[in-house]
Length: 282
Image (cartoon, rainbow, N blue to C red; front, side):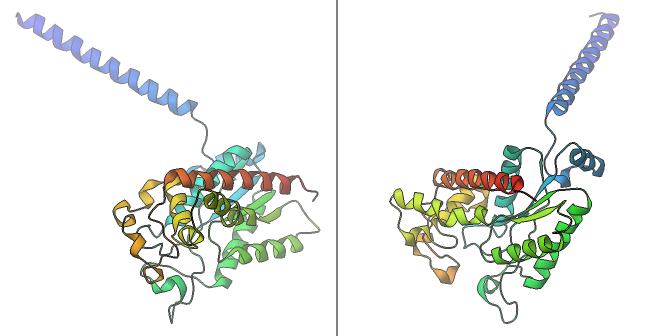
C-alpha cells in the first residue's frame, strides 16, 4: 500500500478511537448526572449537606454498630456493615432523610480484666460514659446544622439503654426549644428479637438454633445484607461449636433467604416508627 494511504488510514483510526472514547465519557457523565445524590453525608460536600437540609432533608439517622467477635464464621465489623446498609434503605423509603457515618466504637465489656466479647481477639470496647458522650455530641452537632429529628439506630442489644438515656436527657434539655428532637429507635433492634424470631420459629427452627449471638438469626441477617461478612467454609462446621467459640446458637443452616425476612421486618418497622415519631406534636 502506498505510504500516503497508510498514513490516511492511521489518521482515521486515531480519529475513530478518539470519537469512541469521547462517546464513552459522555455516557458515563450522563449516567453520573442522572444518578440520585447519596444519602450518606460522608459522601457529600458540606455545601451539599447544607442545601439538602435547606430543601427539607431535616431528619438524620445515626447508625450505631460495634466491633466485636461474631464467631469464627463472621467478621468483626458485621454490625457496622449491616447498620450502614439498613440505615440507607430506611432513609430512601422515608425520603428527606440523610445518614451519618456509622459509630463503630461501642461498649463491649471490661477491657481489664477482659469480659464478655472482650475475651475474643479483635473486639474493641469503650466505656458507657464515653459512648453516651459520643452520641450526645453527635446529636448536638446535627441540631446546630439545622436538623429537626436525630434518630439513633442501634444494631447491637447491649447499648439500647444508653441510646434511650441520651435521647431523654437531650429532649428534656431542649424541651423549651423543641426545634430538634432525638429519637432512640428501639424498635429497630427489638423487631429482630420478636417478630423475626417468631418468623424463624414458624419455619421450624428451634430457639437454640436461632440463638442470641452469631446464631442462625444473626448469621442469616449478615448473609442477606452482604455475603462477604460470612466465611462459608467455617459456617459448615459451626454445628460443632459453642459459647467457647463465641457462638450462642447454631448458625450452620443460616441463609440469605431467611435473613431477608428479618431485613424487611427491620426496614418496615423502623420506617413506620420514625414516621410516627416525626409526626408527633413537639
